[in-house]
Image (cartoon, rainbow, N blue to C red; front, top):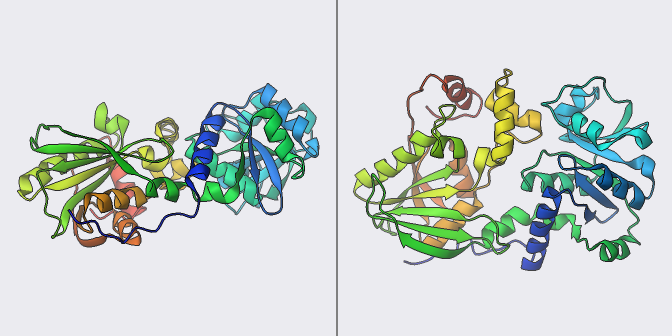
Amino acid sequence: MTTPNSLSARSEISTTELISVSRAVADLRRGEMILIRSAKSAIAAIATEPLSDHGLERLRAIALNAADIALVLPRVRARALGHVDANSGFCALQPQNHANVDCLTLGVWANPLLDMVEKPVATWRTTQTDEDAAIRLAKLARLLPAIVSVPVDPAKIDEFATRENLLILAEEWVNGYEDAAAGSLRQVSEARVPLENAENTRVVAFRPADGGQEHIAIIIDEPAADVPVLVRLHSECFTGDLIGSLRCDCGPQLRGAIAEISASGKGGIVLYLRQEGRGIGLVNKLRAYALQDRGFDTLDANEELGFDADERVYRPAAEMLRQLGFSSVRILTNNPEKLRGLESWGVEVSERVPHKFPSNGHNAFYLQTKKERAGHLF
Protein backbone atom coordinates (compact mmCIF):
# COMPACT_ATOMS: atom_id res chain seq x y z
CA MET A 1 0.00 0.00 0.00
CA THR A 2 1.17 3.54 -0.62
CA THR A 3 1.86 5.67 2.41
CA PRO A 4 0.63 9.28 2.47
CA ASN A 5 2.96 11.90 3.87
CA SER A 6 0.41 14.23 5.42
CA LEU A 7 1.55 13.36 8.95
CA SER A 8 5.27 13.08 8.37
CA ALA A 9 6.13 16.03 10.63
CA ARG A 10 7.19 15.03 14.13
CA SER A 11 7.09 16.79 17.47
CA GLU A 12 10.19 18.80 18.30
CA ILE A 13 11.02 16.79 21.42
CA SER A 14 13.57 14.04 20.90
CA THR A 15 13.28 10.33 21.61
CA THR A 16 15.56 10.80 24.62
CA GLU A 17 13.24 13.49 25.98
CA LEU A 18 10.22 11.31 25.24
CA ILE A 19 11.72 8.45 27.24
CA SER A 20 12.63 10.84 30.09
CA VAL A 21 8.99 11.88 30.41
CA SER A 22 7.92 8.23 30.33
CA ARG A 23 10.33 7.45 33.16
CA ALA A 24 9.02 10.41 35.15
CA VAL A 25 5.46 9.13 34.71
CA ALA A 26 6.51 5.79 36.23
CA ASP A 27 8.34 7.60 39.06
CA LEU A 28 5.25 9.65 39.81
CA ARG A 29 3.07 6.53 40.10
CA ARG A 30 5.49 5.14 42.71
CA GLY A 31 5.31 8.29 44.83
CA GLU A 32 8.76 9.42 43.70
CA MET A 33 9.78 13.04 43.42
CA ILE A 34 10.05 14.69 40.02
CA LEU A 35 11.94 17.85 39.05
CA ILE A 36 10.65 20.27 36.44
CA ARG A 37 12.47 23.33 35.15
CA SER A 38 10.90 26.24 33.29
CA ALA A 39 12.46 29.37 31.86
CA LYS A 40 11.92 31.29 35.12
CA SER A 41 11.75 28.74 37.94
CA ALA A 42 12.07 25.12 39.01
CA ILE A 43 10.02 22.86 41.27
CA ALA A 44 10.13 19.51 42.96
CA ALA A 45 6.79 17.73 43.05
CA ILE A 46 5.12 14.50 44.16
CA ALA A 47 1.66 13.33 43.11
CA THR A 48 -0.79 13.62 45.99
CA GLU A 49 -2.34 10.18 45.49
CA PRO A 50 0.79 8.10 46.38
CA LEU A 51 2.29 10.80 48.68
CA SER A 52 3.87 9.55 51.93
CA ASP A 53 5.08 11.47 54.97
CA HIS A 54 8.62 10.49 53.96
CA GLY A 55 8.07 12.02 50.53
CA LEU A 56 6.63 15.15 52.10
CA GLU A 57 9.71 15.53 54.29
CA ARG A 58 11.94 15.15 51.23
CA LEU A 59 10.06 17.97 49.55
CA ARG A 60 10.47 20.20 52.58
CA ALA A 61 14.18 19.40 52.73
CA ILE A 62 14.87 20.53 49.16
CA ALA A 63 12.55 23.57 49.20
CA LEU A 64 13.92 27.07 48.89
CA ASN A 65 11.36 27.95 51.54
CA ALA A 66 9.27 25.26 53.24
CA ALA A 67 6.51 27.80 53.78
CA ASP A 68 5.98 27.86 50.01
CA ILE A 69 4.80 24.25 49.87
CA ALA A 70 1.72 24.12 47.67
CA LEU A 71 -1.07 21.70 46.90
CA VAL A 72 -2.08 22.14 43.26
CA LEU A 73 -5.75 21.28 42.77
CA PRO A 74 -8.45 21.41 40.10
CA ARG A 75 -10.63 24.51 40.08
CA VAL A 76 -13.73 22.53 41.09
CA ARG A 77 -12.02 21.07 44.16
CA ALA A 78 -10.55 24.45 45.08
CA ARG A 79 -14.05 25.90 45.19
CA ALA A 80 -15.20 23.08 47.44
CA LEU A 81 -12.30 23.95 49.77
CA GLY A 82 -13.41 27.57 49.99
CA HIS A 83 -11.53 29.31 47.17
CA VAL A 84 -14.42 31.42 45.88
CA ASP A 85 -12.33 33.06 43.14
CA ALA A 86 -11.21 29.79 41.53
CA ASN A 87 -11.74 30.43 37.81
CA SER A 88 -8.71 28.90 36.10
CA GLY A 89 -8.15 25.20 35.46
CA PHE A 90 -5.96 24.59 38.51
CA CYS A 91 -5.14 26.55 41.67
CA ALA A 92 -2.35 26.34 44.26
CA LEU A 93 -3.26 26.07 47.95
CA GLN A 94 -0.59 27.12 50.44
CA PRO A 95 -1.56 26.04 54.00
CA GLN A 96 -0.85 28.61 56.71
CA ASN A 97 0.13 25.91 59.22
CA HIS A 98 2.29 24.14 56.66
CA ALA A 99 4.60 22.56 59.26
CA ASN A 100 1.70 20.63 60.79
CA VAL A 101 0.14 19.41 57.54
CA ASP A 102 0.71 15.71 56.82
CA CYS A 103 0.20 13.60 53.73
CA LEU A 104 -3.14 12.25 54.97
CA THR A 105 -4.56 15.77 55.26
CA LEU A 106 -3.29 16.72 51.81
CA GLY A 107 -4.81 13.55 50.39
CA VAL A 108 -8.23 14.37 51.86
CA TRP A 109 -8.08 17.91 50.49
CA ALA A 110 -7.20 16.58 47.03
CA ASN A 111 -9.75 13.79 46.69
CA PRO A 112 -13.34 14.80 45.78
CA LEU A 113 -14.60 11.39 46.91
CA LEU A 114 -13.56 12.08 50.50
CA ASP A 115 -15.50 14.21 52.97
CA MET A 116 -13.70 17.03 54.78
CA VAL A 117 -14.06 17.66 58.52
CA GLU A 118 -13.16 21.31 58.02
CA LYS A 119 -11.85 23.49 55.22
CA PRO A 120 -8.15 24.38 55.20
CA VAL A 121 -6.82 27.68 56.48
CA ALA A 122 -4.77 28.68 53.48
CA THR A 123 -3.84 31.26 50.93
CA TRP A 124 -4.43 30.70 47.24
CA ARG A 125 -2.53 31.68 44.13
CA THR A 126 -2.49 30.92 40.42
CA THR A 127 -0.28 28.08 39.24
CA GLN A 128 3.12 28.40 37.56
CA THR A 129 3.80 26.79 34.21
CA ASP A 130 6.09 24.17 35.78
CA GLU A 131 3.28 23.21 38.17
CA ASP A 132 0.90 22.93 35.21
CA ALA A 133 3.41 20.55 33.61
CA ALA A 134 3.47 18.46 36.80
CA ILE A 135 -0.32 18.21 36.67
CA ARG A 136 -0.03 17.07 33.05
CA LEU A 137 2.37 14.35 34.21
CA ALA A 138 -0.11 13.21 36.88
CA LYS A 139 -2.76 12.90 34.17
CA LEU A 140 -0.38 10.91 31.98
CA ALA A 141 0.22 8.64 34.98
CA ARG A 142 -3.57 8.17 35.27
CA LEU A 143 -3.42 9.46 38.86
CA LEU A 144 -5.71 12.03 40.41
CA PRO A 145 -4.54 15.35 38.90
CA ALA A 146 -3.25 16.89 42.12
CA ILE A 147 0.37 17.42 43.13
CA VAL A 148 2.35 18.81 46.06
CA SER A 149 5.16 21.10 44.97
CA VAL A 150 7.92 23.27 46.38
CA PRO A 151 10.16 25.81 44.65
CA VAL A 152 13.79 24.76 44.34
CA ASP A 153 16.94 26.71 43.60
CA PRO A 154 17.58 26.42 39.83
CA ALA A 155 21.31 26.77 40.50
CA LYS A 156 21.33 23.67 42.74
CA ILE A 157 18.83 21.46 40.95
CA ASP A 158 21.45 19.61 38.89
CA GLU A 159 23.47 18.72 41.99
CA PHE A 160 20.33 17.50 43.78
CA ALA A 161 19.20 15.44 40.79
CA THR A 162 22.59 13.70 40.59
CA ARG A 163 22.66 12.97 44.32
CA GLU A 164 19.11 11.57 44.40
CA ASN A 165 19.19 9.87 40.96
CA LEU A 166 16.31 11.97 39.66
CA LEU A 167 15.55 13.29 36.21
CA ILE A 168 15.12 16.96 35.45
CA LEU A 169 12.37 17.60 32.93
CA ALA A 170 11.84 20.70 30.87
CA GLU A 171 8.18 21.69 30.87
CA GLU A 172 8.11 21.67 27.06
CA TRP A 173 9.03 17.98 27.08
CA VAL A 174 5.93 17.21 29.14
CA ASN A 175 3.71 19.37 26.97
CA GLY A 176 4.99 17.72 23.79
CA TYR A 177 4.89 14.14 25.06
CA GLU A 178 1.56 12.90 23.69
CA ASP A 179 2.20 14.19 20.17
CA ALA A 180 5.71 12.77 20.16
CA ALA A 181 4.58 9.38 21.50
CA ALA A 182 1.89 9.14 18.81
CA GLY A 183 4.35 10.20 16.12
CA SER A 184 6.78 7.49 17.23
CA LEU A 185 4.31 4.60 16.88
CA ARG A 186 5.70 1.63 14.96
CA GLN A 187 4.24 -1.73 13.97
CA VAL A 188 5.65 -4.42 16.25
CA SER A 189 3.46 -7.48 15.67
CA GLU A 190 0.81 -8.88 13.33
CA ALA A 191 -1.26 -12.05 13.24
CA ARG A 192 -4.39 -13.50 11.68
CA VAL A 193 -7.15 -13.64 14.32
CA PRO A 194 -10.52 -14.98 13.14
CA LEU A 195 -13.35 -13.23 15.02
CA GLU A 196 -16.87 -14.37 15.77
CA ASN A 197 -18.46 -12.06 13.20
CA ALA A 198 -15.39 -11.48 11.01
CA GLU A 199 -13.32 -14.57 10.31
CA ASN A 200 -10.97 -12.90 7.80
CA THR A 201 -9.26 -10.55 10.25
CA ARG A 202 -5.71 -9.42 10.95
CA VAL A 203 -4.63 -7.74 14.17
CA VAL A 204 -1.67 -5.33 14.02
CA ALA A 205 -0.04 -3.90 17.17
CA PHE A 206 1.66 -0.49 17.31
CA ARG A 207 4.05 0.57 20.09
CA PRO A 208 5.53 4.04 20.82
CA ALA A 209 9.27 4.60 21.13
CA ASP A 210 9.12 5.03 24.91
CA GLY A 211 7.78 1.48 25.29
CA GLY A 212 4.32 2.65 26.34
CA GLN A 213 0.99 0.96 25.80
CA GLU A 214 0.25 -0.60 22.42
CA HIS A 215 -2.63 0.52 20.20
CA ILE A 216 -4.29 -2.14 18.05
CA ALA A 217 -5.59 -2.11 14.47
CA ILE A 218 -8.23 -4.77 13.74
CA ILE A 219 -8.22 -5.10 9.94
CA ILE A 220 -11.28 -6.90 8.59
CA ASP A 221 -11.04 -8.44 5.11
CA GLU A 222 -8.72 -6.48 2.81
CA PRO A 223 -10.01 -2.91 2.41
CA ALA A 224 -8.86 -1.04 -0.69
CA ALA A 225 -6.55 1.92 -0.09
CA ASP A 226 -7.78 3.95 -3.09
CA VAL A 227 -11.30 4.53 -1.70
CA PRO A 228 -12.41 5.82 1.74
CA VAL A 229 -12.10 2.95 4.20
CA LEU A 230 -14.81 2.23 6.79
CA VAL A 231 -13.21 2.87 10.20
CA ARG A 232 -14.27 2.74 13.82
CA LEU A 233 -12.16 4.56 16.43
CA HIS A 234 -12.86 2.67 19.65
CA SER A 235 -11.36 3.71 22.99
CA GLU A 236 -10.73 0.72 25.22
CA CYS A 237 -13.34 0.06 27.89
CA PHE A 238 -12.50 -2.77 30.28
CA THR A 239 -15.89 -2.66 31.94
CA GLY A 240 -17.95 -2.50 28.75
CA ASP A 241 -15.81 -4.45 26.29
CA LEU A 242 -14.68 -7.28 28.59
CA ILE A 243 -17.06 -7.80 31.51
CA GLY A 244 -20.27 -6.54 29.90
CA SER A 245 -21.01 -3.41 31.92
CA LEU A 246 -24.44 -1.94 31.23
CA ARG A 247 -23.41 1.57 32.35
CA CYS A 248 -22.18 2.43 28.84
CA ASP A 249 -22.70 1.36 25.24
CA CYS A 250 -19.06 0.50 24.53
CA GLY A 251 -19.39 -3.28 24.28
CA PRO A 252 -22.25 -3.17 21.76
CA GLN A 253 -20.42 -0.45 19.80
CA LEU A 254 -17.25 -2.56 19.53
CA ARG A 255 -18.94 -5.80 18.53
CA GLY A 256 -21.42 -3.97 16.33
CA ALA A 257 -18.63 -2.21 14.45
CA ILE A 258 -16.84 -5.49 13.75
CA ALA A 259 -20.07 -7.07 12.51
CA GLU A 260 -21.03 -4.07 10.36
CA ILE A 261 -17.62 -3.79 8.72
CA SER A 262 -17.61 -7.50 7.96
CA ALA A 263 -21.14 -7.37 6.53
CA SER A 264 -20.25 -4.45 4.25
CA GLY A 265 -18.30 -6.77 1.97
CA LYS A 266 -15.64 -4.07 1.46
CA GLY A 267 -13.62 -4.52 4.62
CA GLY A 268 -12.53 -1.90 7.11
CA ILE A 269 -10.63 -1.21 10.30
CA VAL A 270 -11.39 -0.95 14.00
CA LEU A 271 -8.66 1.06 15.76
CA TYR A 272 -8.61 -0.04 19.39
CA LEU A 273 -7.05 2.88 21.24
CA ARG A 274 -5.63 2.67 24.77
CA GLN A 275 -7.62 5.63 26.08
CA GLU A 276 -9.77 4.08 28.81
CA GLY A 277 -12.46 6.30 30.28
CA ARG A 278 -12.13 8.97 27.56
CA GLY A 279 -8.43 9.18 28.42
CA ILE A 280 -8.50 9.23 32.24
CA GLY A 281 -7.70 5.56 32.87
CA LEU A 282 -9.61 2.71 34.48
CA VAL A 283 -9.04 3.66 38.14
CA ASN A 284 -10.22 7.20 37.57
CA LYS A 285 -13.16 5.93 35.53
CA LEU A 286 -14.25 3.89 38.54
CA ARG A 287 -13.95 7.04 40.65
CA ALA A 288 -16.08 8.86 38.10
CA TYR A 289 -18.67 6.06 38.37
CA ALA A 290 -18.74 6.57 42.14
CA LEU A 291 -19.41 10.28 41.60
CA GLN A 292 -22.14 9.45 39.09
CA ASP A 293 -23.79 7.35 41.80
CA ARG A 294 -23.92 10.58 43.82
CA GLY A 295 -25.79 12.39 41.04
CA PHE A 296 -23.12 13.76 38.69
CA ASP A 297 -23.38 13.07 34.98
CA THR A 298 -20.49 11.47 33.11
CA LEU A 299 -18.95 14.80 32.02
CA ASP A 300 -19.28 16.57 35.37
CA ALA A 301 -17.83 13.53 37.15
CA ASN A 302 -14.65 13.78 35.05
CA GLU A 303 -14.39 17.48 35.80
CA GLU A 304 -14.93 16.91 39.53
CA LEU A 305 -11.85 14.72 39.46
CA GLY A 306 -9.87 17.44 37.68
CA PHE A 307 -9.94 16.09 34.13
CA ASP A 308 -11.41 17.61 30.99
CA ALA A 309 -14.74 16.12 29.99
CA ASP A 310 -12.81 14.25 27.27
CA GLU A 311 -9.02 13.82 27.48
CA ARG A 312 -8.61 11.74 24.32
CA VAL A 313 -6.20 12.61 21.52
CA TYR A 314 -6.53 11.49 17.91
CA ARG A 315 -3.02 11.55 16.54
CA PRO A 316 -2.42 7.86 17.39
CA ALA A 317 -5.37 6.88 15.19
CA ALA A 318 -4.20 9.13 12.37
CA GLU A 319 -0.66 7.79 12.59
CA MET A 320 -1.83 4.17 12.49
CA LEU A 321 -3.96 4.87 9.41
CA ARG A 322 -1.02 6.61 7.75
CA GLN A 323 1.27 3.64 8.30
CA LEU A 324 -1.40 1.23 7.08
CA GLY A 325 -1.69 3.26 3.89
CA PHE A 326 -5.10 4.94 4.31
CA SER A 327 -5.61 8.69 3.97
CA SER A 328 -9.41 8.86 3.56
CA VAL A 329 -12.07 7.28 5.77
CA ARG A 330 -15.75 6.74 6.34
CA ILE A 331 -16.07 6.82 10.10
CA LEU A 332 -18.50 4.82 12.22
CA THR A 333 -19.35 7.25 15.01
CA ASN A 334 -21.94 9.48 16.64
CA ASN A 335 -19.25 11.82 17.95
CA PRO A 336 -18.40 14.81 15.70
CA GLU A 337 -15.21 15.40 17.70
CA LYS A 338 -13.71 12.26 16.19
CA LEU A 339 -14.18 13.71 12.71
CA ARG A 340 -12.48 16.95 13.73
CA GLY A 341 -9.73 15.04 15.53
CA LEU A 342 -8.81 12.94 12.51
CA GLU A 343 -9.05 15.85 10.09
CA SER A 344 -6.75 17.96 12.27
CA TRP A 345 -4.04 15.32 11.67
CA GLY A 346 -4.48 15.15 7.90
CA VAL A 347 -6.99 12.32 7.49
CA GLU A 348 -9.80 13.09 5.06
CA VAL A 349 -13.23 12.14 6.44
CA SER A 350 -15.59 11.60 3.51
CA GLU A 351 -18.62 10.44 5.51
CA ARG A 352 -19.92 9.93 9.03
CA VAL A 353 -21.74 6.61 9.35
CA PRO A 354 -24.18 6.57 12.33
CA HIS A 355 -23.38 3.97 14.96
CA LYS A 356 -26.08 3.91 17.64
CA PHE A 357 -27.60 1.23 19.84
CA PRO A 358 -30.71 1.24 22.03
CA SER A 359 -30.53 1.98 25.74
CA ASN A 360 -30.49 -1.03 28.04
CA GLY A 361 -32.19 0.85 30.89
CA HIS A 362 -28.99 1.31 32.90
CA ASN A 363 -27.29 3.70 30.47
CA ALA A 364 -30.19 5.96 29.47
CA PHE A 365 -28.87 8.97 31.44
CA TYR A 366 -25.37 8.35 30.06
CA LEU A 367 -26.63 8.37 26.47
CA GLN A 368 -28.78 11.43 27.13
CA THR A 369 -25.72 13.27 28.51
CA LYS A 370 -23.65 12.36 25.43
CA LYS A 371 -26.41 13.73 23.21
CA GLU A 372 -27.31 16.90 25.10
CA ARG A 373 -23.94 17.95 26.51
CA ALA A 374 -21.26 16.31 24.37
CA GLY A 375 -23.00 16.87 21.03
CA HIS A 376 -23.24 13.24 19.98
CA LEU A 377 -25.58 12.68 17.06
CA PHE A 378 -28.23 10.10 17.89
